[in-house]
Image (cartoon, rainbow, N blue to C red; front, side):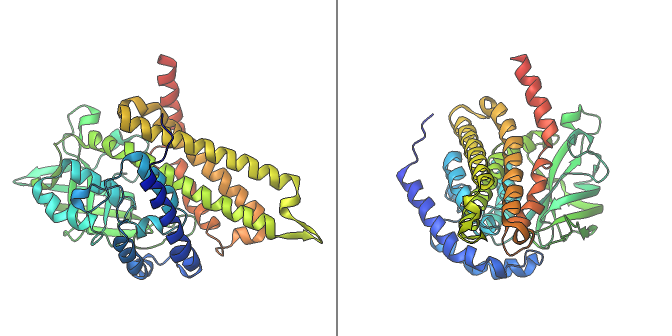
Length: 394
């Protein structure tokens, strides 16, 4: 594996870090992350600056307005962008839009690309992804039971889903629904594009997560589809291929998630250093002079660097040898990076004391919202069990 970073990526990383430091971090105290609609509106000028600087949508292909960066380069850029809670949104890298755009680019028809992908890639609209049925185990998607029944040229969909991230304000939802109930479990479901203004499509609520309901892109919704009718031409890819498409989406998606967490760790470690060197605990002594704080910094930095290295190795392996060769590493980074993130954030709160419990820094916000890292896209336990099974068979 070649660890050398291309010169143009080194420059882009440095420029983006300077931009985040100058344009986003100083404004964090003014961000109301619980009022997502207003926050989105306030960030449009920043998004325009990002586009003018030539940094927009670094992970999307050039033919839809992105930079088309390879996965390893994208991971390196992602870490810089993620140092602010709004970074991904400002750079057109946010989930679920990026994953949905990748799906549309790979499997969309010409009409779907014109209608949905191009405005999505440009940041003119947002999207969401409706997979988890309420009342079923999200860790086992073969239990999906939301039916999409053919009626003439249409599908009629009935579903009750939750944790449909960023539904609030989205223009369309890619809905996972059962189109082939008699097929084997992994060939039962399909992905169907459903405009959110379709009759029968409603939001029940934005789900409170650790006490915060959020709004706009910064939210997770419970939704219902009652006799929602869409043309069969809205299917994405082949009928019954929903699980295959989901895996295509989740593989690179886990690199995006994990390296975003590394950006969060990077920023948390910066804040820890600053606090440790400035916080006086008695005359002539600061936190940085204590053995326990030095130990915390050593452990957290080492675990962050180890996780970061494994993520970059996984990205490089996907690029060079394909996803099958990287499958074990992708499982490893999912649970390892999530746990490292939780440890770093928890330690950062402890080091900051009472300040760490407040929203005067982004640490508490990240701790509340990134705890879900050990659950979404498959809980830790599922990844460990499947990885262990594969390792023992080798």
